[in-house]
Image (cartoon, rainbow over all chains, first blue to last red; front, top):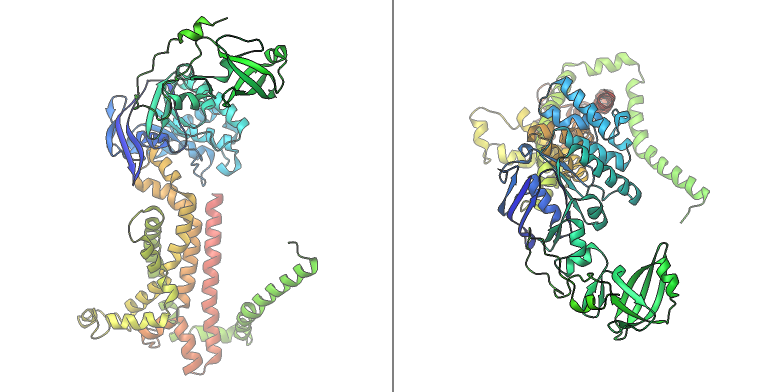
Length: 346
Length: 268
């Protein structure tokens, strides 16, 4: 379990972290999600002991490790660019942590072989890192980090340097690995899809603060503010309301509570169809419908249609612009649907 | 822009011709002159007491200078590559100073400092001879060879970054373990070239030594000074060629030795 309390970090004039607190539950896989420069990597490095916080405390399994060097924190750290020991074979890389701990030869051999098996690199043990693909190198780095049986596993953009296909495979693989190994894991990523697909919990960061912590579904459906709403997925402004594009209902017949709009473009993306429209006040809005719905409506550019939000679909319309002060642990309650939209439910 | 075949060939011939005319021919000529009269004549010239003394003095200087430069070079390169301290650019400039300052000036400045009446001249008066002796020659050689290890190692450190060292730390390695197991193996190629350049430069140093050594035959005469003395003072031209060949052979052996050593370590 990881507990971070009131951590601050300043790099010159730049505030990397401003009073951040976070709890990562034992055995969970939590993602730190945010745009670049939001402070997520700095927070991870502070937890790992690679940076020192200006203020605040870091606890691992209840032990205050704020002033403990990384060597004695009981962590495993995986870097975006693998940090492979280039002059060592795959086996020696994985064995490194055990060797510096002066474990017995037999124990090192067994544990290393076991881990190479787990990460699927048993046949590559005598190769050098530069003879591996990026995905294999990162699996080696994971095995190396896990070999010393860390209390927590810290992953800094672990799939960021990989191409999309390998990234998706490794993501899936890591999820399964976590189910097997169950070590408390904190993963930094700027990819919301990655965070949504892999993590039990997501902490969304922006501008040196944690904006919201919650399960992926909670963040998507009940974002605390506009930033979280927009970072977790596309949003459309419908009048004074913020909704997901797939929650916009398009009808060709006039509906009383609907907003009139003109179709400007219909884009077929396979199963989904993206409809770009212009509201009567000139504001553009995007809706997403299924192919079947689009076919039934026979949408074409120039058509006049009426838009309304599906029930219980409203996000956080009343917190535009600057985000409110960070509440690190509180999960915002799901807002009840506004009465107008429920009354108009078809 | 693609060059025509003819242009490419003539460029190559030009570059090769330049190297051959300026580097290869003069050096080959010395080898040729050295062994023109057979091995016996060569052997006689390089086993005179003066020659043996010069060879051992040159090698002694190398043996002292190289370890010092390796330690200092790695520490400085680490500080320059990893440290974020004020005056870093000044240190950078100071490290390059020996490239800019003529060795003769180095010799003169050392005499100014250590010689009679110099700031540290008292050391000599108390009985520890610096100028016209081995310590002065070592100091001069360190001065002129100081940049090589730093300049070869620093870019390697920059290139590998500190991620591997951080990874080692998170895996439980102490600073010493990280240095010996991660940093040193990672910089070994740069270090290797730095050492080769240091050895070659240390063996070949002439100007600074000419000033600080006194050049007493059999006492404070290195191989380069021997070549000079034989050629200019003794008019022993053949002896100068022979000593030059020995000098070049040392440099060549250094290069070959270290290449094989490293290859062996690679395959081990």
